[in-house]
Image 1 (cartoon, one colour):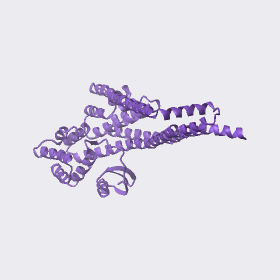
Image 2 (spheres, rainbow, N blue to C red):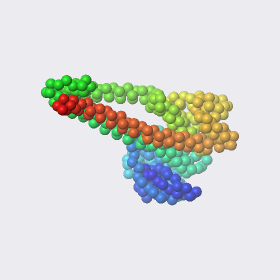
Image 3 (cartoon, rainbow, N blue to C red):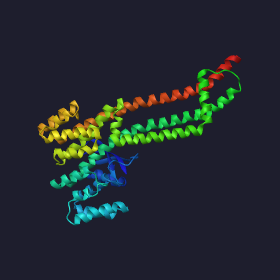
Image 4 (cartoon, rainbow, N blue to C red):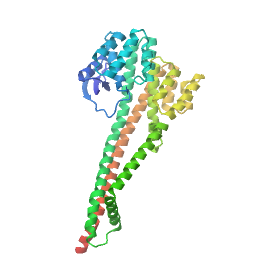
Length: 395
């Protein structure tokens, strides 16, 4: 499970990180292994399986445990043996047994990982393969853990921002449906016995309530059919162009989703370059972390880099930069710290996305509450308007 940790770094700064661990003690040991002192640990409620979990196998947890064992002085084979002894799940034991058998036969770890693509992503395989060339597997594992923690943090913030509006929509829709399907028909029965003419808006609402009550099953079937067909249509559109590309067509979301994708691209490229992977293979690997539409631009940019262009000019030609990130890329190319500059650009993008999420939620949630309140209030007022007219007549 994941833990939110506030810790004191070796530079005496308070930092917030996410840690995958079995329990609080395990999380605390991992934080201390990074040279930090944990001041607060709290379990994080998961809304969905993490992106780094493939086939029920958590790459982050596997990397953290293997990193701790390697840091303690164990070899890769001894570390795998220790993980296998602890594991109780049949499927995960099978994954570890295949890795351990191959290592004992003298095979490279990266090749063994590539033989299980349903568990280990191409990105992870590329990181390990680069680490084998530099003989620095622990540092590469730490780099992947940090990378995935940053990706999960932004994703979880997006999901958390959508929870409250979703609850409001469900609650508001439920109250509105109850009023129209149950309350309105009973008011209609009462008003029919009075023989008085009703305001046209109230009459329209009462007529709709009687229709909904008389044809409830038919309306319910139509709603279910509409939702089902809409879900299949949406699924087909997502499989064709991708969820991010589909959401990018919404006017208010398009620009911010582009920034989010650029953040993923820059963070992945930065991690791969800092791990020793050449820029062209790194661009090919990073294409799997972005939408198909943006990946097409990345493919053209990769072809330009292969032809001799600089990364900054290729990205600028394919609109894969912003003015700030373009300057940082050029600085990185001049200084030889391109990977570091890509990582810093991703951090800048993450901060921009976080600020936009905060502004959007502060504005959207009150507006949504106001709209739901107006709809429910209008239904109630229209139901009581005839009573007010009757009271005026009696007075």
